[in-house]
Image (cartoon, rainbow, N blue to C red):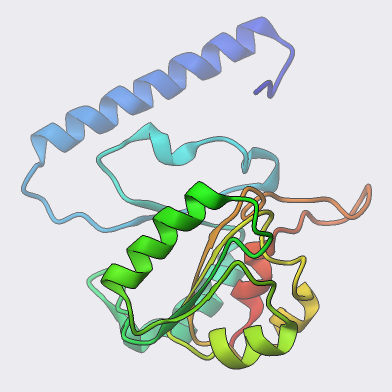
Length: 201
């Protein structure tokens, strides 16, 4: 990762990050019994590729693309947030695993996990879902998991997701799940997860 070509600036940035990491570790050791809540990062799109969550491995992190999106999500889920965490009832859920049928080892691991721990979930393994199946069988659950290539947007339009009234927590385990893309020189970067953030009642 190169944020600047200036060697001195890069060295200064590295030094600052190392100091931040050391300070975070020291603080954690000094306050082991302190209540800790997730840290929400609002990260500029130009710095989104940096592993901010690794600065302090003792702290839980999540990231969001804007204050407005964070506010909307908070207002929407406010009644279900307790002690800084969103409480989700996972008795209902669904997962799409290896729809392209070319991730056999991953399919075996994920299928074994869901069959053992969540046998009551709706599962689609080794099959490509239609938009109708995703909307009717998966997005109406409390949890939805996609584990396959890409982000799952190859099976459903992001615009249709954003228009849908969704009240489920989404886990995207694909190689392209959180990558931001540009649609043009002056356009805002977009990522698959942002469509799900927009899908609220």
